[in-house]
Image (cartoon, rainbow, N blue to C red; front, side, top):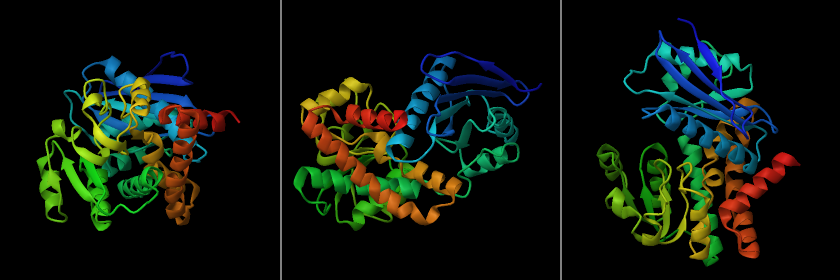
Length: 338
């Protein structure tokens, strides 16, 4: 069977396609949210979705976040995202090659890269079919964690007039590639660290390298600390746990950390500083954009600017009394529409 592509109209999105291939078992959604700044750049998430609606909504939500991320971090790319459903199937080279057929059919409107459960070997298979595949030679977890580190320094400076993270207590949810590297950076800065992860292998590995306290994933968000850092999946801060928060700020790598925008307003009213996720976790896409634009020598400089951009958002939020998530969104759209 050949690749089948079905267009689905969604208000506010430039294009949404559902791509399938019965032979390779491909079941993929590609969402292109906005391309005013340039081609849509975003990764492909490989996940076991319970339903097509879950899969579609994930791609829609994440593609919009990529529009905002790419704009607010200053790169000239639009927002897009793809989701491959792995329910009841195994990852194969043929699966990713057929996904790449769908990417190629979009004629450069969407540039794909890695994301959750999509690894270098998968992207290599994609590159055999499509020229619009990036991130194969770029390690993104390092830049992402370093960008977060600069964001934490900026947040602490905003709250305490001091960007030194020594003895600052940071509670990290999820210590995989990004969370683990962030923990190591914080350890070098002599911060106090508490971690939680559903993956005990990650905990064991990290314990061999640095010292930290451990708690359960459920209890991490109750930790009395300076910074909570959600570095796993989205929706970490929600209506059920917001009242249990005992932190001064939230600075994390996870996408869509807030269950919805009203959580950002609640945090603002309750004097918890929220660093917008798509701004502070933009190190990875900055690295991929640098690969595309052949400006790898400027990555460190661009990562440091994450802290500067966050400071501008925090100061504008303080001035306007508008929540930081809404301020960052406004700034992103102003750049897109300028």
